[in-house]
Structures are given as structure tokens and as C-alpha cells.
Length: 346
Image (tube, rainbow, N blue to C red; front, side, top):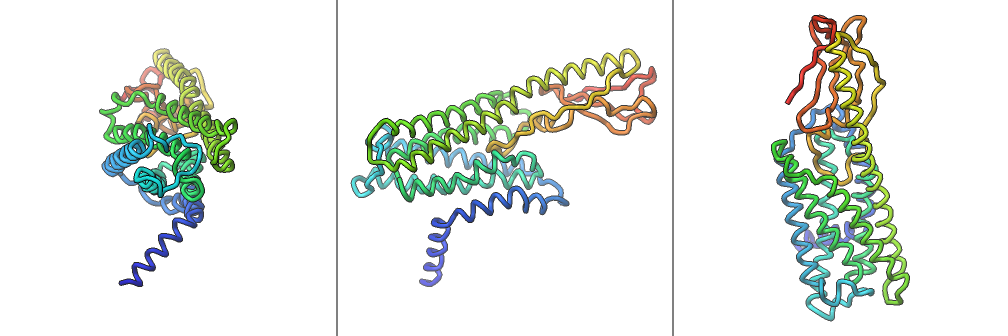
């Protein structure tokens, strides 16, 4: 029994001290191995699992944030620009324990990616998603090892608070379409995440103008994390929302043109299409159902005038009422008056 406990402890120490290998394997698993394993398998229905998972992450993040508040916020440890001596106070020891649990939470977040892959939503396992999840355990480990507590904890405390809001959002999203009206604030959640990164690098770089006993290298490391993630999330924001607005206007114009063509008995335009919002997966265990429509290629050339429809073509109308779908008919997809027959699915 003693040998088993010793082996378990040695395994744990090896994991904690050499987790960079686990992070590298995570990247390989996410972008190569797992998609190949799922290639010929059907996507799994994990909606109930996602509700439970996101509820757990919400509660876990809330507890970590509460512990940081109790051990440091308003006291001498939250903004102290030096590592904390953990022998000087029970509060400091409590903070050390909280930092450890925050580190563990970076590994539980790997399930975000796993659920994407099991649902065959690999388009959401973006470079941003993998970088974000893959480098966080290593960075938090460095903080625990070389600059625990004190000035370092602002980053972890703020990040825990953001994750409370984020995982609550995705818990509600996983409940199904009838709850979508309660989570209209997705755009603002992304903006909140970006504001977090501004606060993080501002808090770190203040030490460039203050002489204090805190590792300058680690200060730069965390500050650059904030800048890197700000740029990556900004790109996601532009892809997801600015281009979506333009794509929505285009789709609505195409829908109006298609309906007009139907009324006139013919199709006038053949568009090459547009791919909207490719940069998905910023740390997102589940997306709204209408987001799936944004992944499709928007086109009006699914119907051919010279012989009927070869494919049924669908495209988002830009709102939660559904989508307009051109229906392949037995007569080649052309209505009695020569126009495309369409229907709106609510």
C-alpha cells in the first residue's frame, strides 16, 4: 500500500513539474489525432452532458473567485508587487491552496475541446481555441513555481470571474433553442473577455514604473499573454460580429432577390457565395443553434435553370426565425410558373 501511494505521489509530481508535455499532447490530440478518430463516427448528442459540465465549471469558477476574495481582495496580498511568504499568515496559505485549484481548473477546461470533437464540431477547434487552452496550464504553473501569490493573483482572480459569466452563458445555451432569448448578450461577453486582457497587461506593466521585489521576467510573460490574447480575441470579435453584420445584410438581400425571382418566374443571379465567421471557438463548449448556419456557404446557385436542382440549398436569414430553404422538387426544383419554390421553416 505504501508503495502504491509513493508511486501515485511520484506520478503526481511528474505531472505537475512536466505538464508541458501534456500541453503539447493536447495540441496534437485536438488538431490531428482526435479528428481522425472521429472521422468515420457519428457525432455524439452531448446536450445534457454540456449542461452538467458548464454548471460544474460555473460553480468551480465561483468558488475559486470567492477564495481569492477571502484570501486577498482588500488585503495585503491582492496587489502586492512581490511573491508572498506563505509562512506569514493563514490567509497566505489559503491563497496558495486557491492558486493550486486554479491551476487544476486549466486542465478541466480541456473538456471544452473534447466536447467539440465528440460532437464533430472541429471547425470550432480553432487556432485561437487551442493556443488559449494549451498554453494556460504551463503559464499558471510558472506562476505557482516562481512567483506564487501576491501580484500574480490579480490575473487568476479576474480570469475566474470572467469564467463564471462565460460558463453560465454556455450552460444556458446548452439548454436548447427556447432559452436563446435569455442569452442575447454573447457579443458583450466577448467584449468582456477582451476588457479582461486589457486589465491584465495594464496591471502587470505598471511594474515597469515601480521598483518592487517581483520577477520582471514573469511580469513581462503575463503582460504579453494579455496582449496576445487581446489581439486574438479582437480578431475573433471582428470575424464573428463585424463580418456577420455584413454577411447578414448580404444574405437578406439574396433572400429578397430569390423571392423576387420566384415571383417573376425565374432566377436572375448566380452568386459564388461567401463563408461567414470561420474563426470560431474562442473557449466555447457550445454555440447557439443559429451559429451553425453561419458555417454554411451562402450561395444562390443551388438551382440550375437548364435541368433542375442538383442540390437543396439553405442559407441563414440572419435571425432566430429559421432559414429559407430551396426545396428540390420532383420536377427539378422549378415551380409551376418556372420559378423556384421556397418555404420558410420556423
